[in-house]
Amino acid sequence: MIIKRAYKFKLKPNQEHTTKCLQFAGAGRYIFNRGLAERQKAYEATGTSPRYFDQNKEITQLKEQSETAWLKDIHSQVLQQSLKDLDRAFNHFFRRAKQGRKPGYPRFKKKGQGESFRFPQGVKVEDDKVYIPKIGWIKFYKSREIEGTIKETTILQEGNAWYVSFSCEIDIPSPTPAPINEEKAIGIDVGLTRFATTAATVQNNIQHIENPRFLNKYLSRLRYLSRQLSKTVKRSQNSLKARLKLSKLHRRLKNLRNDFVQKLSTEMIKNHDIFCIESLDITTLLQNSPKALARSISDAGWRSFLHCLKYKAKELGKHLVEVGKYFPSSQICSHCDAQQKMPLWVREYNCQRCGLQIDRDDNSAIVLKAAGMSVLKACGAALPKGSWEAGILRL
Image (cartoon, rainbow, N blue to C red; front, side, top):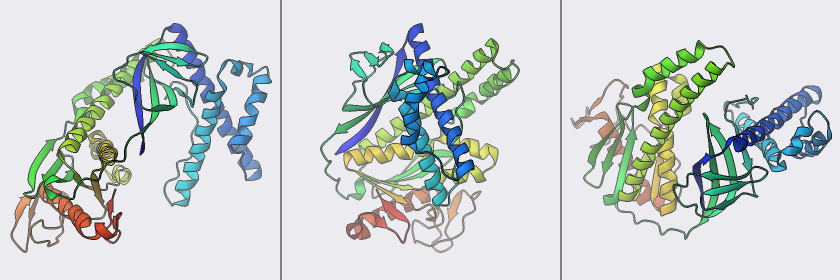
């Protein structure tokens, strides 16, 4: 079985390396924006737009023109990858439009935002140094060994720091599927009051995982730095310093969230073989929620946590069952299966049929585990992907 894994390290570039990285990123941004503008003009004039191969041929012509002769100093793969990014963005745009979703038309790239460039080949790694074509050898902080075959290498800037990210393919033996044993099953209900409530084993042992709320801890500092940035003159040295301070704090928040979900998902993967989770439409939640609630949802990092669980479970042959986003896990009684309305502000489940009194999240975690186990034990044997009628997927 071939899996994909990314390895990200912080670079230690000198001034010459930094200048060249900025040149490469700027050239990629120029080609992307030029290609996007060309597609827009062609569509307005003829109703059709050029494709990747048509625009790729123009790169050679641009290098021969005096105004853009500076592109000769840039590796051709960097320019080609920018056009591939543009082509991929349009493919995603048309796919979402066809599906009836919000399309998200490709936007022009801005200088200083998400600076990066990519190589599909030609990059070499020796010990703690990486060779980047036309830039040279750069040292990096090698915190772990790189496994597999490097397929793509991306150089990206975050704040005033540069990073290298290797996208690798690793060939591992196909894992043996874990046995269907409820003693190793866990139901996971995510929330905001608590990050997650879990129900494990046949006895439905409840565990509450507290929400770290990283954003709340640094919100006052973020607001202060944002105000300081807004008071500076645009493109001045003070503006650059203020922007770097703000980006550094945002990067710290991102790293804290990532560290939390990685450690939590790894701990769960080690202790359980079956994971029963809920499918969340986080995009709709963010769009329909008040500002304060949407901010708390974004800070929680549910999507990252569930993504980590999915790929780690797949690599180890463990079972992950995902219920549909309309499955009423919080409305079903975990004791007698009765169903009743449960407004969001009601935090305790009081069953009108059997009289069960239980915390709302505890009840939901138990119901999620029971629904997942029913798929694995019953229709899961005949339908490997789960139950379509119940909106439950087996991944």
